[in-house]
Length: 183
Image (cartoon, rainbow, N blue to C red):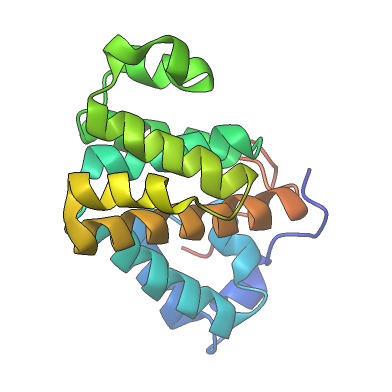
């Protein structure tokens, strides 16, 4: 159960939050637990929605790389909510189930990942565990992806480290009980 209560039905219907609730539902398909927590602070929820919508939907970075590193960050940070939300997205982006299953020990299953995916996963590991990235490792990513996609890959990894840390700090889980959002 989450450390803080989820925003309640009456609060979600108030004039400050209701338009944002509608936007979250329009962009995400439902009011996820994450947003029901974020909506304690409408400015934070709005900024989060704007930023992460662009990270997920507007980058030139291929969707399989984006979702692989999101799933790896979730795994490394012990963030099951993040993994549960992104596993179906990863599958839609073309990541096969055996690759998702191999993520905890991806280095032992190199045949399940392309060389570029291996570079991306190694970068996710380094950024999540050590923060600083050696110049040679970043150069290899740049050589494989070019500057724009290298920057986008770093941005996705950084963004989803933020997401998993928020989720885990507040103990947000997909099976938590909460008040249903207003109809």
